[in-house]
Length: 277
Image (cartoon, rainbow, N blue to C red; front, side):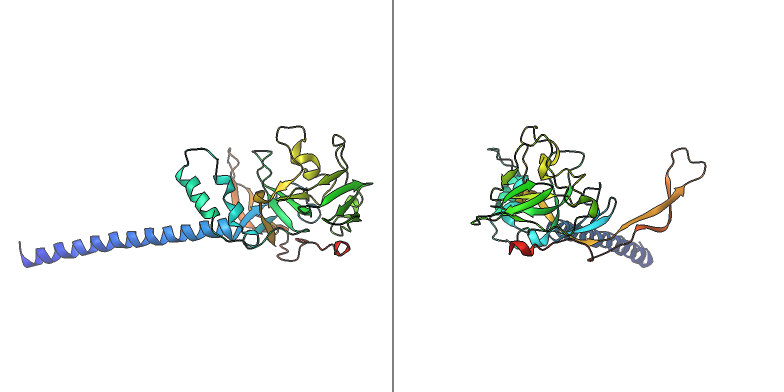
């Protein structure tokens, strides 16, 4: 083999090795990026799209929001949904139990926060957006369309001033006819949540769906509260019409059309109740 042939063979080998190393580096960067995205979505922020009108007129159907998970980060409850309690633990379950022992507790939900929860009542609709009204240890009472709270160690009920309710929902916080109780003591580790659209919201009042089903409860568990609303990106549409001669009616990309303008931080994502202080 001539020197020229040897040189060309070595050159091709170097190019092959270089291509292979470029692929390995790309794969490494992709895996690192994927891990970062998963960590951010799991523990810091995650996007959601509102489905339904239960938070009208504070939040609207179709709006895109960003949920702050970090403010509620608590490793003691973060991994409960991964643990089944079976005698033979899977690798994921063992990892979840290990993470639960890490003493990380950033904060807990506050009264007035608008949150995303998983009440586990409808597999086709796993996420609900509601507002926290009752805290652990509170007793909440419903009377004449109004809400009153008796805090722990308090002797009397105080009627809430809910300025975030629309005019049509003022004085309309009623219980379903099937619910006979008027007062509810909220257990530790649980919250009472309701939609701002009191006339059309499946929430704690109705056990999120039906109080007669097995396992029904009025309360949202701490571990089922994913996070609080941080940003509102409005409701936009990138699709404009359909392709012509298109029997499948596949939408085509068009210009950005705002159905609702983004409000970012300028939303009633939390509320104060000075009468309770």
